[in-house]
Image (cartoon, rainbow, N blue to C red; front, side, top):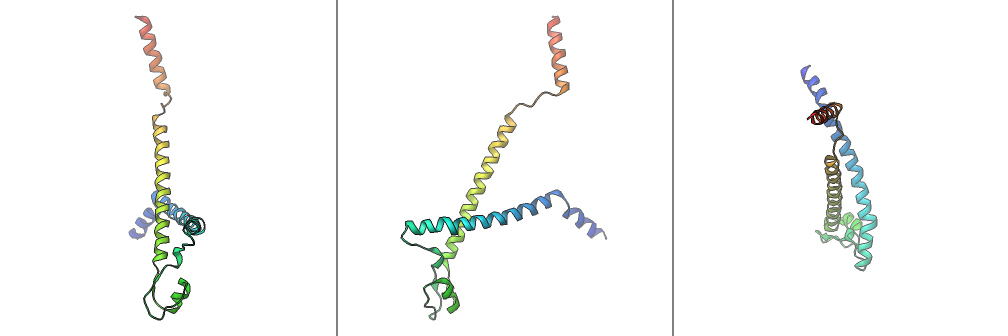
Length: 138
């Protein structure tokens, strides 16, 4: 069964496992950002704008829809829930911004690590001593 052996080699590679862990952490991070937007940012925007609540913004696509809230409107018929889209778009922008800042910070740390001089190896120390001894003889 060479196909199964190849699949096992592929699935157990470090990169695939790292990717799986990244996806799981990303999903958890998405939940955190969704909560941040829904529970912290949107209420503040609503308070600043006098009660603006994107979650209940919709356009009824049926004459049967007469409700004031999105949940009730969806029960009555088809609606175009653009407020939900705005919230998800805001979630995406925040996630993208946070990831950008995190990657930028990691890049800065990596540059600092690369800029640090590496300690000399034992061989380099011995060669330095030999060079210094040869200079002292002349």
